[in-house]
Length: 230
Image 1: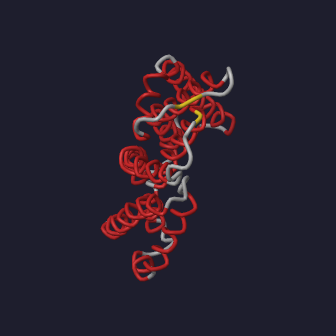
Image 2 (image 1 turned 60 degrees about the vertical axis):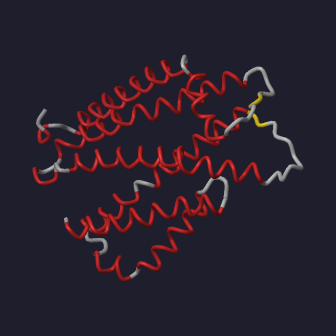
Image 3 (image 1 turned 120 degrees about the horizontal axis):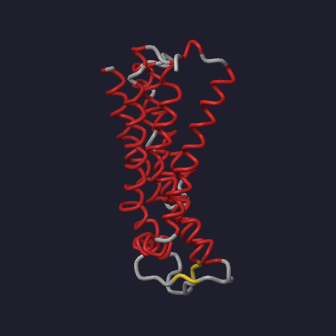
């Protein structure tokens, strides 16, 4: 459909169709994931080591399975979500602006990198540090619902944090600030990264904070270099 001939109502209808596609795909993936929730549960528990998770109410096992299904639905639906977003705005872009597809691909890759890094590298350290705070005085009876909620939040936080390079590159390309500005004010940026890491770290663990801050600083430096080249 020619973008120039589309009315406002036609734009809304197009948006509605794409949102329906996203919702339908998410529902299908989440529904399938629900039936494999306990297999996924076994995988999500690995970073915690040999622990026994409990439930305290009859509905909690269902809630745990539902949380895992929703989490899986969002993760596996990301390519469709980003594609539908891109397909909606693509007709309105000029030819030289259509390279935005690379931004879409980069955003997916960076988000998944953040999720994988948090789950396989940061989360085991964070949980080990948290459990060590009991110092042998307390014994653990961790609710499965709380554990799954914590892990999902932890992974999502790192996924979104890893989108930072796209923000930096966009600021440079949109001329909100220049490469020189960001290069000269690196001290303030580093301090900002440390503050953000401290606030967003779910366990407030200093080790976890630095494990979040170090890759962020590295990604910031890489994004400056890419922004300068582009």
